[in-house]
Image (cartoon, rainbow, N blue to C red; front, side, top):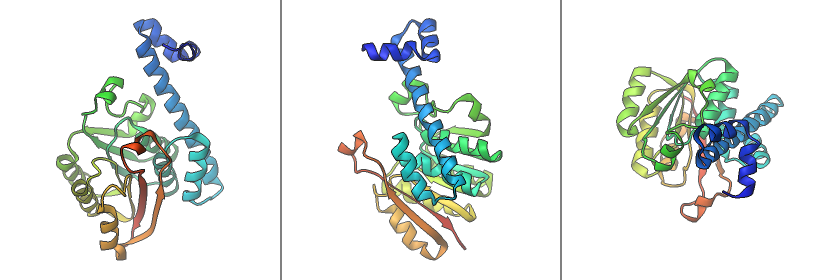
Length: 248
């Protein structure tokens, strides 16, 4: 392990505790990384809150917070939308590490009402290695969270039938055309009037653009923005993010 990583572990109480308990530098490093990610998200929530209180437009807040905290824009967007519009029932697909879940649940905690339902496959070895789907979400935020492990194509509609209606839907699972269009179309039938449909990676297929065009007379305030530069840009197109409101 590099010297600067060792100092970071020693100076972080939780990672140092992990090292003492496990005698594993790798486990201590994982704890350190999780804590550092959480600190960035806490900082992002705090700055977002300050700017929301100034009544700045959400797209402007997203840009400011992302530049100041160096995290991706989509979790910031979800935090701001949940805080400003206070949806009660939120469903997201594609939890992975839990960046979105952490930010959404932080917003729900601030709102003092609401519940998040997250769906994802437990198929990432890297995520499993750190503790499984949603490992970034601390226990303190989990009281308003239901995590469902399974294929969205099989699990989404039964969940929506059970819930009867939702206030916000977020897609971030498989970004190929068929799953995206399936999720948008299925969720749309259950989103309340005035509710929100949001999606990451809207440029990875034509599904979002086609859906928005098909339902153009039922949506308001379509917003789209490009993500920050990431290492994965060498493998995939840099994502665009989008959201709009249901208006019937």
